[in-house]
Image: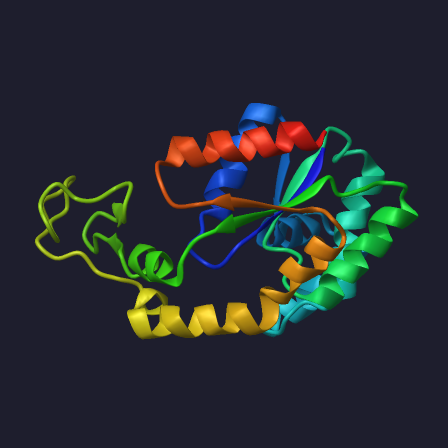
Length: 217
């Protein structure tokens, strides 16, 4: 069972991918982890990717697809996987499809975690860290008991990461709509798209995702 998780920043793709992969005993493949593993293992493609990463440049699509293909051919993905953070564009989705076809594999579903822009802004601008002890808080699942005060050490002022400021979050959403949202149409045309509301209780969303995944097998 092989799946792709789609959705805007703040939709919970990474959180849900980890939860369902643990329950189904399949691999969670985030783009960052895939690249770091390839670099750590010193593969030829990993060495090529490292040059781009060290220069602060985007790793080319063909390299990312090639690294995923290495994992596929090694047998590491035989039990199935969830791709989180890739593909982000239609050309990436097309490259992934060609790679899967070449290896006689298939994507069972592309699951869209649907969440409103208003909710994304609340979630991302509602992420805070304690500058004293490093404790992390986020809306809506892990809020401090007293507003802006750390539960663990009592520090009186939590801080927000610069990329979680509301203006930055709105810009990230605009980028998503321009670059990533079109792949929703790609997978809809492939008859692989499944949509799930990602607003509500964490456990309820996980149950809905698991239901879709099991139905797709």
